[in-house]
Image 1 (tube, rainbow, N blue to C red):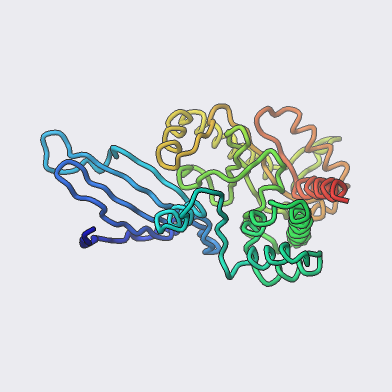
Image 2 (cartoon, rainbow, N blue to C red; image 1 turned 120 degrees about the horizontal axis):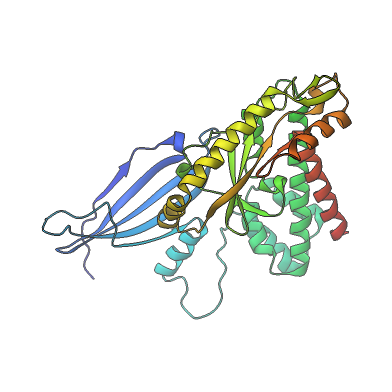
Length: 348
């Protein structure tokens, strides 16, 4: 096997879009086909946290009647991301010498530590807590432990404990008068479970340019999107007195109007957006007749009215909506609290 020179280059990051950088390598520059590999890093523009690594392999044919390659229209395209890349590298490096089932484990990870505990029979809540405290790779821990009944139970307990910690922090932020919608958005990142078990993740944001940075495009198990419009928890005029009744304030009406405009745009662009996500990310989203939720305000910041009266005003407002609902941070977090209690009861 001969060794050829490899032409590589990088692309400038677009951190405002969540793209931290791309490295490219020319695999083949032949008479009829050009092949290229690229690795891109994506993450949060606010925290700088890297959340996804993506490897893409693409090939391009020459334009008809031209000596140039048609880089706008790939002939073939394939990609993998995060742990899938590690599996591919291990396969190409000959790590899987014989047929069978393998597990990829980083020797410096918590997974290795806890797998050793399982093998020795020393896994208990105390040692598990210590291992998790020393590492921050819960996703790997889950993958490593779910192969055994005792390990699966331990992971479930540890996951609930972490979620409860996140919930405590979110509740603290929601009642703090200095908390902004940016603070709440940062605290909610990585915690889609807060919104309910029907959501399995967050859609690729960079293809949804019409959304504000504080909006969260949740993905349902069916592939449909659900847009969450986040506003601040401190909304003094969350509700107001009108004649003899309470009605929702102008901030609520404006947030709902903003979300309805997003849904209208997505309705108009649905078919095209589905094609974009399919081609660029290899995922199937259902963009037809999407729904959304506005999360806004907290009764703690509305001292002139009782929580029950606030709830009734919002419930009355919601009863006249079809594709949008309004929730306070208080109600959102209380629902998550009840879900955690249910899970804890099931594990008892």
